[in-house]
Length: 378
Image (tube, rainbow, N blue to C red; front, side, top):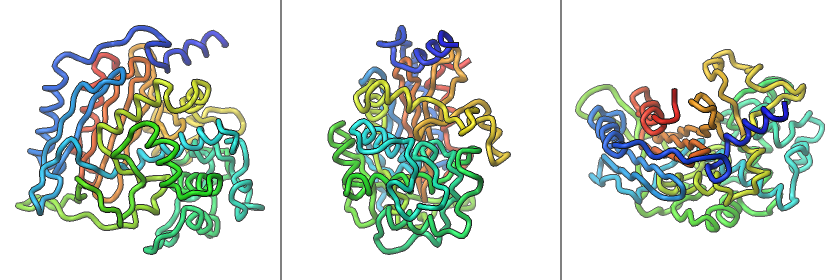
Protein backbone atom coordinates (compact mmCIF):
# COMPACT_ATOMS: atom_id res chain seq x y z
CA UNK A 1 0.00 0.00 0.00
CA UNK A 2 2.81 2.42 0.83
CA UNK A 3 4.52 1.88 -2.52
CA UNK A 4 1.29 2.40 -4.45
CA UNK A 5 0.58 5.60 -2.53
CA UNK A 6 4.05 6.89 -3.31
CA UNK A 7 3.55 6.30 -7.03
CA UNK A 8 0.23 8.14 -7.01
CA UNK A 9 1.75 11.04 -5.12
CA UNK A 10 4.74 11.29 -7.43
CA UNK A 11 2.48 11.50 -10.46
CA UNK A 12 0.85 14.62 -9.03
CA UNK A 13 3.98 16.76 -9.01
CA UNK A 14 5.95 18.63 -11.67
CA UNK A 15 8.46 16.97 -13.93
CA UNK A 16 11.37 18.26 -11.86
CA UNK A 17 10.06 15.98 -9.13
CA UNK A 18 8.36 13.25 -11.10
CA UNK A 19 9.82 12.61 -14.56
CA UNK A 20 10.04 14.04 -18.06
CA UNK A 21 8.02 16.96 -19.34
CA UNK A 22 5.62 16.33 -22.20
CA UNK A 23 5.70 19.05 -24.83
CA UNK A 24 2.88 21.37 -25.76
CA UNK A 25 1.06 19.69 -28.68
CA UNK A 26 2.15 20.73 -32.18
CA UNK A 27 -0.23 23.16 -33.83
CA UNK A 28 -1.83 24.06 -30.52
CA UNK A 29 -2.05 27.79 -31.18
CA UNK A 30 -3.88 27.26 -34.46
CA UNK A 31 -6.29 24.76 -32.92
CA UNK A 32 -7.08 27.11 -30.04
CA UNK A 33 -7.56 30.02 -32.42
CA UNK A 34 -10.15 27.96 -34.28
CA UNK A 35 -11.98 27.20 -31.02
CA UNK A 36 -11.94 30.84 -29.92
CA UNK A 37 -13.05 32.13 -33.32
CA UNK A 38 -15.85 29.55 -33.43
CA UNK A 39 -17.06 30.60 -29.98
CA UNK A 40 -17.41 34.20 -31.18
CA UNK A 41 -18.88 33.27 -34.58
CA UNK A 42 -21.54 30.98 -33.09
CA UNK A 43 -22.35 33.53 -30.35
CA UNK A 44 -21.41 31.21 -27.54
CA UNK A 45 -19.94 34.35 -25.91
CA UNK A 46 -19.27 37.98 -26.83
CA UNK A 47 -15.59 37.76 -25.85
CA UNK A 48 -13.00 35.18 -24.88
CA UNK A 49 -9.45 35.01 -23.54
CA UNK A 50 -7.34 31.83 -23.71
CA UNK A 51 -3.84 31.42 -22.29
CA UNK A 52 -1.55 28.39 -22.16
CA UNK A 53 1.62 28.19 -20.07
CA UNK A 54 4.17 25.47 -19.41
CA UNK A 55 7.14 25.42 -17.04
CA UNK A 56 6.52 29.05 -16.01
CA UNK A 57 6.55 30.31 -19.59
CA UNK A 58 3.67 31.56 -21.73
CA UNK A 59 3.11 29.47 -24.86
CA UNK A 60 -0.20 30.74 -26.29
CA UNK A 61 -2.26 33.89 -25.69
CA UNK A 62 -5.48 34.57 -27.59
CA UNK A 63 -8.08 37.32 -27.21
CA UNK A 64 -11.18 37.47 -29.37
CA UNK A 65 -14.50 39.28 -29.52
CA UNK A 66 -15.98 42.12 -27.49
CA UNK A 67 -15.20 43.21 -23.96
CA UNK A 68 -18.13 45.65 -24.15
CA UNK A 69 -20.78 45.43 -26.85
CA UNK A 70 -22.05 48.98 -26.26
CA UNK A 71 -18.65 50.64 -26.69
CA UNK A 72 -17.36 48.11 -29.26
CA UNK A 73 -14.27 47.58 -27.10
CA UNK A 74 -12.38 44.43 -28.13
CA UNK A 75 -11.07 41.84 -25.71
CA UNK A 76 -7.31 42.21 -25.22
CA UNK A 77 -4.68 40.26 -23.31
CA UNK A 78 -5.05 42.74 -20.43
CA UNK A 79 -8.86 42.58 -20.27
CA UNK A 80 -10.06 41.76 -16.76
CA UNK A 81 -12.89 39.23 -16.26
CA UNK A 82 -14.68 37.92 -13.19
CA UNK A 83 -13.73 34.31 -12.51
CA UNK A 84 -16.46 32.99 -10.18
CA UNK A 85 -15.62 29.79 -8.37
CA UNK A 86 -11.99 29.77 -9.46
CA UNK A 87 -11.85 31.91 -6.32
CA UNK A 88 -12.15 28.80 -4.14
CA UNK A 89 -8.60 27.59 -4.80
CA UNK A 90 -7.22 30.99 -3.77
CA UNK A 91 -9.26 30.89 -0.56
CA UNK A 92 -8.08 27.35 0.18
CA UNK A 93 -4.47 28.35 -0.48
CA UNK A 94 -4.84 31.25 1.96
CA UNK A 95 -6.02 28.79 4.61
CA UNK A 96 -3.00 26.57 3.83
CA UNK A 97 -0.62 29.53 4.17
CA UNK A 98 -2.17 30.60 7.47
CA UNK A 99 -1.78 27.04 8.73
CA UNK A 100 1.90 27.08 7.77
CA UNK A 101 2.23 30.30 9.77
CA UNK A 102 0.72 28.55 12.81
CA UNK A 103 -2.35 30.78 12.88
CA UNK A 104 -4.92 28.01 12.46
CA UNK A 105 -5.33 24.29 11.88
CA UNK A 106 -7.64 22.84 9.26
CA UNK A 107 -8.61 20.20 11.81
CA UNK A 108 -10.06 22.83 14.16
CA UNK A 109 -13.80 23.23 14.49
CA UNK A 110 -15.28 26.30 12.84
CA UNK A 111 -16.46 27.58 16.23
CA UNK A 112 -12.85 28.19 17.26
CA UNK A 113 -12.77 31.13 14.83
CA UNK A 114 -16.45 32.04 14.51
CA UNK A 115 -17.95 31.91 18.00
CA UNK A 116 -21.53 32.08 16.71
CA UNK A 117 -21.14 28.47 15.53
CA UNK A 118 -20.64 27.29 19.12
CA UNK A 119 -23.12 24.57 20.03
CA UNK A 120 -24.14 24.06 16.38
CA UNK A 121 -22.16 20.88 15.68
CA UNK A 122 -19.61 22.84 13.66
CA UNK A 123 -17.65 21.24 10.84
CA UNK A 124 -13.88 21.45 10.70
CA UNK A 125 -12.15 23.88 8.35
CA UNK A 126 -10.99 20.91 6.28
CA UNK A 127 -14.58 19.76 5.85
CA UNK A 128 -15.48 23.23 4.60
CA UNK A 129 -12.56 23.11 2.15
CA UNK A 130 -13.57 19.66 0.91
CA UNK A 131 -17.33 20.36 0.68
CA UNK A 132 -18.02 17.60 3.19
CA UNK A 133 -19.30 20.05 5.82
CA UNK A 134 -22.98 19.75 4.90
CA UNK A 135 -23.57 23.51 5.25
CA UNK A 136 -26.78 24.43 3.47
CA UNK A 137 -26.25 26.66 0.43
CA UNK A 138 -26.66 30.31 1.41
CA UNK A 139 -29.96 31.77 0.28
CA UNK A 140 -30.49 35.16 -1.30
CA UNK A 141 -31.67 36.47 2.07
CA UNK A 142 -28.13 36.05 3.41
CA UNK A 143 -26.84 38.76 1.08
CA UNK A 144 -27.24 42.49 1.41
CA UNK A 145 -26.93 45.36 -1.10
CA UNK A 146 -24.82 47.18 1.47
CA UNK A 147 -21.13 46.48 1.93
CA UNK A 148 -20.88 43.82 4.65
CA UNK A 149 -17.97 41.67 5.80
CA UNK A 150 -17.54 37.97 5.22
CA UNK A 151 -17.88 37.53 8.99
CA UNK A 152 -21.31 39.16 8.92
CA UNK A 153 -22.36 36.93 6.02
CA UNK A 154 -21.09 33.93 7.99
CA UNK A 155 -23.19 35.01 10.95
CA UNK A 156 -26.26 35.08 8.72
CA UNK A 157 -25.45 31.63 7.35
CA UNK A 158 -25.21 30.33 10.92
CA UNK A 159 -28.74 31.63 11.54
CA UNK A 160 -30.31 29.82 8.56
CA UNK A 161 -33.37 27.79 9.49
CA UNK A 162 -31.74 24.80 7.80
CA UNK A 163 -28.05 24.95 8.67
CA UNK A 164 -26.93 21.51 7.47
CA UNK A 165 -28.13 19.29 4.66
CA UNK A 166 -26.43 16.34 6.40
CA UNK A 167 -24.24 15.92 9.49
CA UNK A 168 -20.75 17.36 8.89
CA UNK A 169 -18.25 14.88 7.56
CA UNK A 170 -20.76 12.27 6.37
CA UNK A 171 -21.21 13.11 2.65
CA UNK A 172 -20.04 15.39 -0.19
CA UNK A 173 -22.06 18.31 -1.55
CA UNK A 174 -20.74 21.41 -3.29
CA UNK A 175 -21.88 24.57 -1.49
CA UNK A 176 -20.70 28.16 -1.89
CA UNK A 177 -21.58 28.71 1.76
CA UNK A 178 -18.56 26.60 2.75
CA UNK A 179 -16.16 29.07 1.17
CA UNK A 180 -17.95 32.17 2.42
CA UNK A 181 -17.37 30.71 5.89
CA UNK A 182 -13.69 30.13 5.06
CA UNK A 183 -13.45 33.75 3.91
CA UNK A 184 -14.85 34.77 7.28
CA UNK A 185 -12.23 32.62 9.04
CA UNK A 186 -9.49 34.37 7.06
CA UNK A 187 -10.88 37.75 8.11
CA UNK A 188 -11.14 36.66 11.74
CA UNK A 189 -7.60 35.23 11.87
CA UNK A 190 -5.82 38.03 9.99
CA UNK A 191 -7.89 40.93 11.29
CA UNK A 192 -8.08 42.20 7.71
CA UNK A 193 -10.73 42.25 5.00
CA UNK A 194 -10.47 39.18 2.80
CA UNK A 195 -9.42 41.28 -0.19
CA UNK A 196 -6.53 42.81 1.79
CA UNK A 197 -5.32 39.49 3.22
CA UNK A 198 -5.31 37.93 -0.26
CA UNK A 199 -3.46 40.86 -1.77
CA UNK A 200 -0.75 40.80 0.88
CA UNK A 201 -0.33 37.03 1.19
CA UNK A 202 -0.83 35.92 -2.42
CA UNK A 203 -1.34 38.44 -5.18
CA UNK A 204 1.50 40.89 -4.50
CA UNK A 205 4.17 38.25 -3.66
CA UNK A 206 3.31 36.29 -6.83
CA UNK A 207 3.11 39.31 -9.11
CA UNK A 208 -0.58 38.77 -9.91
CA UNK A 209 -1.13 42.43 -10.72
CA UNK A 210 -4.49 41.91 -12.45
CA UNK A 211 -5.99 39.61 -9.82
CA UNK A 212 -8.06 40.83 -6.87
CA UNK A 213 -11.19 40.20 -4.87
CA UNK A 214 -13.59 42.33 -6.84
CA UNK A 215 -16.04 44.97 -5.64
CA UNK A 216 -18.66 46.82 -7.66
CA UNK A 217 -17.26 50.16 -6.55
CA UNK A 218 -13.77 49.41 -7.91
CA UNK A 219 -12.72 51.29 -11.03
CA UNK A 220 -10.75 48.68 -12.97
CA UNK A 221 -8.84 49.56 -16.14
CA UNK A 222 -9.76 47.16 -18.97
CA UNK A 223 -12.70 45.72 -17.00
CA UNK A 224 -14.93 43.48 -19.16
CA UNK A 225 -18.72 43.69 -19.10
CA UNK A 226 -20.74 40.52 -18.45
CA UNK A 227 -23.65 39.25 -20.54
CA UNK A 228 -26.41 36.67 -20.59
CA UNK A 229 -27.61 34.91 -23.76
CA UNK A 230 -30.97 35.86 -25.22
CA UNK A 231 -33.17 34.20 -27.82
CA UNK A 232 -31.59 33.94 -31.25
CA UNK A 233 -31.83 37.19 -33.17
CA UNK A 234 -29.98 40.35 -34.06
CA UNK A 235 -29.05 40.94 -30.42
CA UNK A 236 -27.82 37.65 -28.99
CA UNK A 237 -26.89 39.02 -25.55
CA UNK A 238 -28.29 41.21 -22.79
CA UNK A 239 -26.45 42.83 -19.90
CA UNK A 240 -26.19 40.35 -17.03
CA UNK A 241 -27.84 41.10 -13.70
CA UNK A 242 -25.79 43.20 -11.32
CA UNK A 243 -25.01 41.57 -7.99
CA UNK A 244 -22.94 42.60 -4.92
CA UNK A 245 -19.94 40.61 -6.15
CA UNK A 246 -17.81 41.31 -3.08
CA UNK A 247 -20.27 39.27 -1.02
CA UNK A 248 -19.42 36.20 -3.09
CA UNK A 249 -16.12 36.60 -1.23
CA UNK A 250 -14.16 33.41 -0.67
CA UNK A 251 -16.58 31.48 -2.86
CA UNK A 252 -16.56 33.53 -6.06
CA UNK A 253 -15.43 37.18 -6.04
CA UNK A 254 -12.07 37.00 -7.83
CA UNK A 255 -11.38 39.05 -10.96
CA UNK A 256 -8.38 38.21 -13.13
CA UNK A 257 -6.94 37.62 -16.60
CA UNK A 258 -6.18 34.32 -18.32
CA UNK A 259 -2.47 35.17 -18.11
CA UNK A 260 -2.61 35.78 -14.35
CA UNK A 261 -4.57 32.57 -13.81
CA UNK A 262 -1.94 30.56 -15.68
CA UNK A 263 0.80 32.33 -13.70
CA UNK A 264 -1.07 31.38 -10.50
CA UNK A 265 -1.24 27.66 -11.33
CA UNK A 266 2.39 27.61 -12.44
CA UNK A 267 3.42 29.15 -9.10
CA UNK A 268 1.16 26.89 -7.05
CA UNK A 269 2.23 23.60 -8.63
CA UNK A 270 5.92 24.47 -8.88
CA UNK A 271 6.05 25.04 -5.12
CA UNK A 272 6.20 28.84 -4.97
CA UNK A 273 3.01 29.35 -2.94
CA UNK A 274 3.06 26.76 -0.14
CA UNK A 275 5.46 24.04 0.95
CA UNK A 276 5.52 20.68 -0.78
CA UNK A 277 3.89 19.10 2.28
CA UNK A 278 1.05 21.63 2.12
CA UNK A 279 0.72 21.13 -1.63
CA UNK A 280 0.41 17.38 -1.10
CA UNK A 281 -2.47 18.03 1.28
CA UNK A 282 -4.09 20.42 -1.19
CA UNK A 283 -4.04 17.70 -3.84
CA UNK A 284 -5.27 14.90 -1.59
CA UNK A 285 -8.89 13.93 -2.37
CA UNK A 286 -11.51 14.53 0.33
CA UNK A 287 -12.40 11.81 2.82
CA UNK A 288 -15.32 11.48 5.18
CA UNK A 289 -15.04 11.16 8.96
CA UNK A 290 -15.30 7.38 8.69
CA UNK A 291 -12.28 7.33 6.36
CA UNK A 292 -14.12 6.60 3.13
CA UNK A 293 -13.28 8.63 0.02
CA UNK A 294 -15.89 11.36 -0.31
CA UNK A 295 -16.63 10.23 -3.88
CA UNK A 296 -18.23 7.10 -2.38
CA UNK A 297 -21.06 9.14 -0.83
CA UNK A 298 -22.22 12.12 -2.86
CA UNK A 299 -25.31 13.63 -1.25
CA UNK A 300 -26.86 14.74 -4.55
CA UNK A 301 -27.45 11.78 -6.91
CA UNK A 302 -26.87 14.13 -9.86
CA UNK A 303 -23.21 14.40 -8.82
CA UNK A 304 -22.67 10.76 -9.79
CA UNK A 305 -21.71 12.09 -13.22
CA UNK A 306 -18.43 13.29 -11.65
CA UNK A 307 -17.30 9.66 -11.64
CA UNK A 308 -13.94 9.17 -9.93
CA UNK A 309 -13.06 12.88 -9.95
CA UNK A 310 -12.22 13.90 -6.40
CA UNK A 311 -12.09 17.27 -4.66
CA UNK A 312 -9.12 18.81 -2.89
CA UNK A 313 -8.45 22.38 -1.79
CA UNK A 314 -10.77 24.26 -4.15
CA UNK A 315 -9.68 21.96 -6.97
CA UNK A 316 -11.29 19.10 -8.84
CA UNK A 317 -8.83 16.20 -9.08
CA UNK A 318 -9.01 14.27 -12.34
CA UNK A 319 -6.80 11.25 -13.04
CA UNK A 320 -8.52 10.15 -16.23
CA UNK A 321 -5.17 10.41 -18.05
CA UNK A 322 -2.94 7.95 -19.85
CA UNK A 323 -0.44 7.70 -17.01
CA UNK A 324 -2.72 8.53 -14.07
CA UNK A 325 -1.05 11.93 -13.82
CA UNK A 326 -3.24 14.48 -12.10
CA UNK A 327 -5.17 17.22 -13.90
CA UNK A 328 -6.21 19.79 -11.28
CA UNK A 329 -9.00 22.01 -12.49
CA UNK A 330 -12.04 24.08 -11.67
CA UNK A 331 -14.71 26.05 -13.49
CA UNK A 332 -16.21 29.32 -12.37
CA UNK A 333 -19.56 30.97 -13.07
CA UNK A 334 -20.90 34.26 -11.79
CA UNK A 335 -23.49 36.61 -13.26
CA UNK A 336 -22.31 37.34 -16.82
CA UNK A 337 -19.05 35.39 -16.68
CA UNK A 338 -17.75 31.84 -17.17
CA UNK A 339 -14.22 30.60 -16.50
CA UNK A 340 -12.14 27.43 -16.68
CA UNK A 341 -8.63 26.71 -15.39
CA UNK A 342 -6.74 23.40 -15.52
CA UNK A 343 -3.20 22.07 -15.13
CA UNK A 344 -1.67 18.70 -15.88
CA UNK A 345 0.48 18.81 -12.77
CA UNK A 346 3.35 16.45 -13.74
CA UNK A 347 4.14 18.41 -16.94
CA UNK A 348 3.14 21.85 -15.60
CA UNK A 349 0.92 22.41 -18.65
CA UNK A 350 -1.80 24.96 -17.80
CA UNK A 351 -4.73 26.40 -19.73
CA UNK A 352 -7.04 29.23 -18.65
CA UNK A 353 -10.15 30.42 -20.45
CA UNK A 354 -12.35 33.41 -19.55
CA UNK A 355 -15.64 34.30 -21.25
CA UNK A 356 -17.98 37.24 -20.57
CA UNK A 357 -21.24 35.29 -20.66
CA UNK A 358 -23.38 33.16 -18.39
CA UNK A 359 -22.76 29.40 -18.64
CA UNK A 360 -24.22 27.74 -21.70
CA UNK A 361 -23.61 24.44 -23.51
CA UNK A 362 -21.79 26.10 -26.40
CA UNK A 363 -18.83 27.32 -24.37
CA UNK A 364 -15.61 25.60 -25.50
CA UNK A 365 -14.31 24.29 -22.16
CA UNK A 366 -14.71 20.61 -23.02
CA UNK A 367 -12.97 21.08 -26.38
CA UNK A 368 -10.19 23.03 -24.66
CA UNK A 369 -9.52 20.12 -22.31
CA UNK A 370 -9.32 17.68 -25.19
CA UNK A 371 -7.16 19.96 -27.34
CA UNK A 372 -4.62 21.23 -24.79
CA UNK A 373 -4.17 17.89 -23.03
CA UNK A 374 -4.18 15.80 -26.22
CA UNK A 375 -0.96 14.03 -25.22
CA UNK A 376 -2.17 13.24 -21.71
CA UNK A 377 -5.73 12.05 -22.35
CA UNK A 378 -6.57 8.51 -23.50
